[in-house]
Each structure stands twice: as C-alpha cells, then as structure tokens.
Image (cartoon, rainbow, N blue to C red; front, top):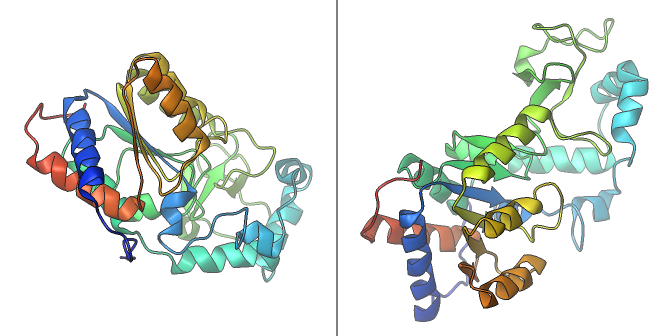
Amino acid sequence: MSDSSAGFVLTDALDAEIGHAARLLRAARHTVALTGAGLSVESGIPPFRGPGGLWTKYGEPPLDGYQRFLRDPREHWESRLRPVEGWAKGLRETLDRAKPNAGHYALAELEREGRLASLITQNIDDLHGQAGTRSLLEIHGNARLVRCIECVARYTRDQVQIDPENLPPHCERCGGILKEDTVSFGEPIPPDVLRGCYATCERADCMLVVGTSATVYPAAEFPYDVLRRGGAIIEVNPHESELTLALERATAHGATTLSLRGPAGAVLQRLLHHVRSTSGPETSA
C-alpha cells in the first residue's frame, strides 16, 4: 500500500471537519463517491496532463482514436501486438507498477460497512477493484479489460485468444468486435456504465468527491445534479479546485457542502475512523 500521508499534519480544525463529514455520511440514505486522478497520484500514477503528466512527457494519443479504430480495427490490433512506445508504453509500465493506496482501501471499507452505495471513477487503473470495491462504475473504462463495442461484454486479457492471422478478435457472446475497455478520444461512454451512473446519482443524497476538480464531462455534472436536488457534497482534495469555488457559492445559498484539504489516503482513513465511531443511522442503501 502506498503511503499518501508523508508530511501531512492533521490539525484539530480539519479533524473536526472530517468528523462533520462522517456525520453526513451516517445520516445519508444513498451516498455515491466520485474519484479522479488525484487519488491515483497517491499510488504513483501521474496525471495525464500538466507537469510530469504522461501525455506531457510522451505526447497525447490521437484525438480521433476511436474513429481510427472503427476504420481499421485489424490495424489497431496489429499495433497492439507490436512493442509499445511513447505514451502507451509509459502508461502500461506505470499501471503495472501501481498498487491501491490507503484512500482506495478506505472507500472499499466504507462500502463494506454500508456507508457507500456505489463508486464512480474516472480512473482506468483498476485500483478500486483491486482494493475490494464491488459496486464500481468505471466511466472511462479499465485498462486491464477488453470490451465488445456491440454488446459491451467485458473480458480480462487472458480470456481473449489473440490470433495474429484472424484480427480483430470477436465477442464470444454476440460476435461483435473487441477493443480495449479504456475509452478512446471520440468514443462514447459505454451505455451500461453511463446508465448506472445516472441511476445511482438520481438516488444520491450525499456525494463524496475525491481527487478530482470535476471539470471533465459527463462526470463533472454529477456533483451539481446532487446539489440541485438538495444533497450534500463532501470534497476531498489537497488543493482548491473549480469545484471548491462552486461549493462555496452553493453553501452561501444554503447547500450542505464541505471541502476537506489534505491527501486522500490520510483524509479518507480518518473519515472511516470517524464514521465507525460516530453515532447515527446505520446504512447507506
């Protein structure tokens, strides 16, 4: 497990805010978490953009990646069988090394204890699944899976038999073409995942937003939807974000919001502690 709390000092003021957040979680009927790249950074995965980002270092993938795939899926799969270079190599090596951190495990524990109904992640690294989260909606896909573009059936890499003479591989269920589950530029969000996101967010009276500024759509709209329906928003981020400013404006108009400043691993572990020790309603369904 990565140590995401090095150098972090928990102040009395922040601990009191985390205690408040715990009471909100315990009082909620249906809490949804939304996570982004900031959580994965604590597992050693750099963001895609910005200083040190994978795309900054290796170059961005093509903006018409999905259209290229549809034009020539055989060539796409042939390229996957060749030695990877650039951003693809950097991403694969980084993901292969990464392990869940304290934040991933805290969220999985909150789910097991009935405090988290579902988790939406923008990350493709599979770390939530490895940590044990079960009700998981990976809105940008999972780098360890392959998906049918017709019926959206998903397979692990070792479930797909790759025959270099018969590419692209096809789905065992419907015969559709397979591609990696990660969502390429120009590709729609898989409909089963998107439906799941909207369904759980429609029920949410509390949302825990971790490691994301909530600026990439469609995920960015989910916290605002919860706010419009009168739900509470708890942001966990070491830095102020665009979402922070929006929450401040919403709070001024009577909304229930909290912004917890600190590394996700340390803050979420402390939140888990408070949830376990705070009296209140027993489940988030």
